[in-house]
Each structure stands twice: as C-alpha cells, then as structure tokens.
Length: 158
Ligand SMILES: [Zn+2]
Image (cartoon, rainbow, N blue to C red; front, side):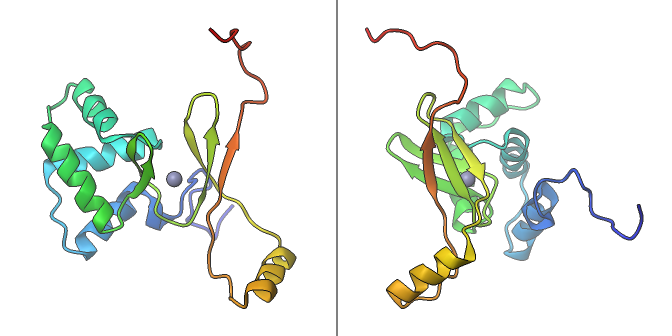
C-alpha cells in the first residue's frame, strides 16, 4: 500500500512519459513552442505510429488551434533528431511515435498497424548468440509480423 510513489497504471517509465519528454526537450535546449507541444501531446495521446500527415490532420481535427503542415514536419524532424520521439522508415514513408526506449514491433499483416511490444529473450539464447558471434549483446529490437487470431471473415480476393 505504501512505500512506492510509482503509479501502477503507468505503462511507460517516467523517462518515456509525456512529462519526461518535456524534460528531455529542455535538457537538450529545445524550446517548447506551442506547436511543438501540440505535436508531443498528440503523439502521447494516440500512442500509435503515425505519419506526419496523420499527425497534422489529427491535431487540426481537435479544432482547438490549427497548425501548419510545415510546422508539423519540422517539429517531428527536430524531435526525432534529438531522440525525443521514435521515427520508423517504412516503404510508405516515415512513421513517428512516442517511445524511444528499446522495444520491438508487431506489424499486423491485415491492417499494417504497428504495435509496440516488449520482448525478453531467454538468457541462454543471448549467451549462445554471443558465443557464436563473439559479441556481447547490449540491446535488440525485433520486428514481428502477425495476423489477428480472431478477426472479421476475410472477403474473397477480387
Ligand atoms: Zn515503436
């Protein structure tokens, strides 16, 4: 009951929280403009991998305040350059998301949606890879592809 100030519902470490991102921005000297804050808020709210265009449209759909497309692009690039946000190079273009700690991805073969997942590899497998390659493993990310276990019936191919 007591002794811990951590929020058990928080699914991300402090460093990866919205407040953590704001702190990391200030630590590297990034000015927190209104537009930059809007971009960060959107990414942390959606917790998905989104294109610059998605982000632009979602921010403006909120109707609070409009933001220019160029400003969205520039802010995303800057935030990625300082490792505040994640950027994935995909065949369809770049996707951005709010996690920058090491993590893996599951890509849905049906929808193309990318999910962040945390995967641990068994110690004996890591040791085996180290023995085979002569390298100490210091990190890894995996890209998994899968289809929903239960989904809508697939339409016949046209
Ligand atoms: Zn990710």
